[in-house]
Each structure stands twice: as structure tokens, then as C-alpha cells.
Length: 140
Ligand code: HEM
Ligand code: HEM
Image (cartoon, rainbow, N blue to C red):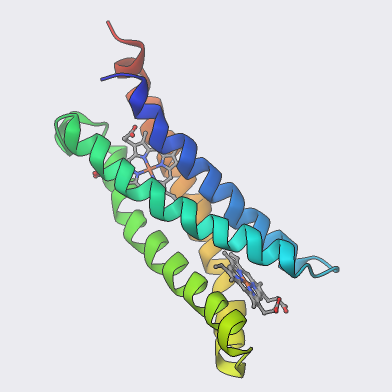
């Protein structure tokens, strides 16, 4: 095991920060438009890059049994996180391309707080996992 184990956490932390940014840009008094689209699209993209890398590094380093137990909770929540960002990004993109349909707007707005909560939880579980992974990175 080596420094490559830090690649997923770095990109994924970026994804989490971009979700937080997207949320903040649309829930303060001043609503941002282009900045929200950009951070939202980047949050989606970073998530789609981060999760296969996470899967790969666990698989390539001996599987879940070698990793700290926290990775199990991190993996369970990953399905929720990726499912939510997929729907949220899909609705956002659909609104940009096909106009702001009432239903899409409502669902996107309502879903936002769950996307935020699940991503923050994913980061906490990720940090707990990372803490257990650090001894492997520094090596014996
Ligand atoms: C591909 C990513 C995304 C795209 C393209 C997108 C696009 C949009 C669009 C078109 C709207 C309608 C209002 C407007 O025209 O600005 C909107 C509203 C909103 N978005 Fe997103 N979004 C994305 C991701 C996210 C994420 C990740 C969050 C938060 C976790 C979020 C939270 C919100 C909220 C809260 C609103 C409602 C704002 C209001 O009160 O009018 N969006 N978004
Ligand atoms: C977008 C949010 C995230 C997603 C979707 C995600 C997804 C995943 C997945 C699918 C795995 C592989 C688990 C397995 O094979 O059982 C993994 C591993 C891991 N994740 Fe995440 N994760 C995210 C955020 C984070 C964050 C913020 C951190 C820490 C700062 C983190 C730290 C880790 C660590 C340490 C591993 C073990 C493999 C490695 O070190 O590369 N993750 N993650």
C-alpha cells in the first residue's frame, strides 16, 4: 500500500466541497446562477471520478477485509450518495436543457438538503476510513 491510497480521498473531498458550495450558492439570500451550474456540474463530475477510484484502490489492495471496518459504512453510504447526486445532477441538467419544469424544480430544491447531508456523512465516514488507512500509507 502506498501514496496512491490518497488519490481517491483527495478527489472525493473535492466533490464533497463542491456539493457544499453548490448548496450554499443557492440557499443564501443572494442566489447565484452560473456559479451554481458550474459548481454543480463539477460536483457531479468529481463524484463520478472519485467513486470508481475508491472501488479500484480497495480491490487492488486486497479487498474490504484488509481495510478498516469503517470502509463498510463508507461503502453503504456511497450507494446513497452516488444515487442522489445522479438524480440531482440529472434534474439540474434537464432544467438547463429543457426549461425549468415545475416538478423538476421542486424535486431538485427539496432534494438539495439530503444531497448535502449524505455527502457530509460520506466525508465523515471517509475520514474515519482514512484514519485507519494511514498506517498502511506511512508503511512499516
Ligand atoms: C449538474 C449539477 C446541477 C445543475 C446543472 C443545477 C442546476 C440548477 C437549476 C437550473 C436550478 C433552477 C434555478 C436556476 O435556474 O438557477 C437549480 C436550483 C437549485 N439547485 Fe441546482 N443544479 C445542480 C446541482 C445542485 C446541487 C449538487 C445542489 C445542492 C446539494 C443544488 C441545489 C439547488 C437548490 C437548493 C436550488 C433552488 C434554488 C432556489 O431556491 O431557487 N443543485 N439548480
Ligand atoms: C463523493 C464522496 C465519496 C464517495 C462516492 C466515495 C466512495 C468510495 C468507494 C466506493 C470506496 C471503495 C470502498 C469499497 O470498495 O468497499 C471508497 C474508499 C475509500 N474512501 Fe471514499 N468516497 C467518498 C468520499 C471520501 C472522502 C471525503 C474521504 C476522506 C477524506 C474518503 C476516503 C476513503 C478511503 C480512505 C477509502 C479506502 C481506499 C483509498 O484509500 O483509496 N472517501 N470510497
